[in-house]
Image (tube, rainbow, N blue to C red; front, side, top):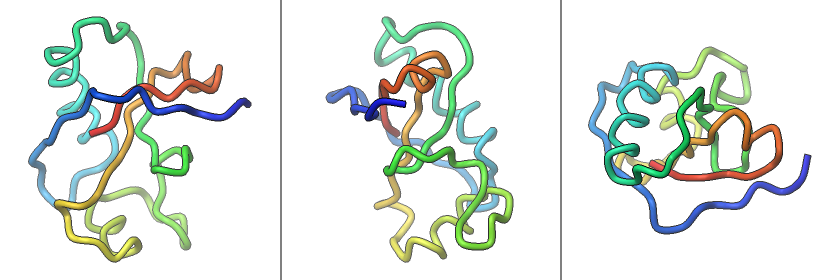
Length: 100
């Protein structure tokens, strides 16, 4: 897979409970991002960490992703956490689109 690249200028802030899963974050973020950027493609999306890895588990124990688990692992406040949304097709081709 080639290097993922951030699509600059498209981001949004969402407010969710600390116990939310990656699917819950996607359900909140994708519709909001599509309002902000109508050119976003329809279809499925992945939630990614800043290093391009899928945010489906929290390192180092590979427990199922929760926002509070990720916060504890990364050691930042909730306001400083950044996750990326990427269409599945683009992820497979190595193109990262937007972040939340």
